[in-house]
Length: 483
Image 1: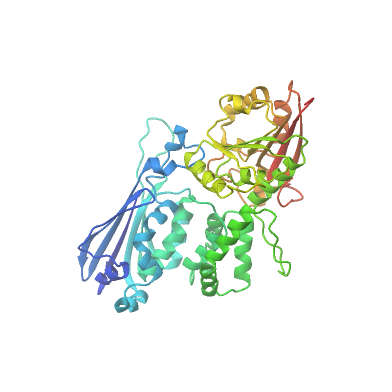
Image 2: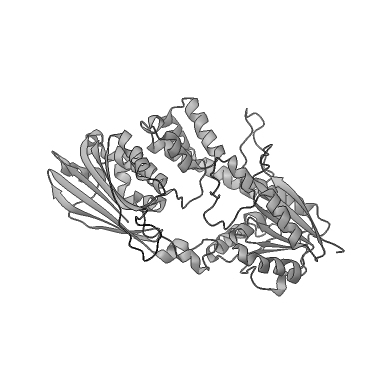
């Protein structure tokens, strides 16, 4: 994956000072498991060209993913194409230009209009050519695209969806880079990170002065934020005509304080909010899931022994340790990286007598483990949708026939609710989801699973309720008949 920046005309060489990169030195760094190299392919007073070339480590790309042990996770195009990953890799190299903070002698050049030519690729986009052009042309750029011809021996397609994009025009270096930082993830429609309200701050910071008036504003916002609550929050801020610069400054200043508050909330679910605030706080869906599961477990007559499958970083497991009567919690997680984070989380609870410290262990739902047989409670929070449907029968057999828990709790997305998030019929909430079921489909599967097995089940929802589409998360609780 690459990005070239070329300036032509008088004073073209000044972009080296805005980039804060010496043309005589090779920039060669490793960032987040990727090798980033920056080199000047041309350095003349009237023509200067810089090449950024990124080579990610394909193994490092999948470390820590929920199914990093599954070989199919290694078969993708993320190491090759320009996406949000690419933006995170090259940001340290371009940070001075993005922030517009070169050395004092060159600060006036930040607002200088250069004749710039940028090319990037490969870009794997599902957008047609004319839509890609409509993203850049309103900003004053000329757009050219190249894509390879494909010669298959069978009838499939003859044009690649992968393109190399070139844009050129009169613009400041800072503005062109900031526009790319927003539009690259829109083109690829992929985010390697959790989309939260931090994304709103990114749009405000890099979109200042151009995004609000862009003809494709709605498309950019939808593909950047994806979820209806975030889009609504963004629109409310725009509607109130908030000063973007002040918002960005305030968010930046209070970032440490906000992070500390979120950390405290995650460790203490009973934390109370300021009773004098005018609007109720927005509670994340993940938080609502944890609360619903904890409440369900605390009401069970038998909950001494708990197994939390797919425990991840231990956020749910640590809450289960507060429930009165719990004696043992197994936090079962296949990812070693997540296990280490869970261990760090649990270590903070050492010495507290009012907590049951969960035990982190490696495990899988695809084989029998004697430790999990006849436990009081087994929990699968947002787990089953990450399993290929053809393998589900094996997992269900292991759970109901081999392990035989007194209570089995599952949560999974409600596909109907995706309409509220303004998602398309074929869209799913996470790239690793193998399926998402409607409420009727889940009920049908649950009925099949307990056939000829001594279990009953109840269904409920978690999250804000929509009259037609229900709630975003479905929860099913299976109870074993006869103890």
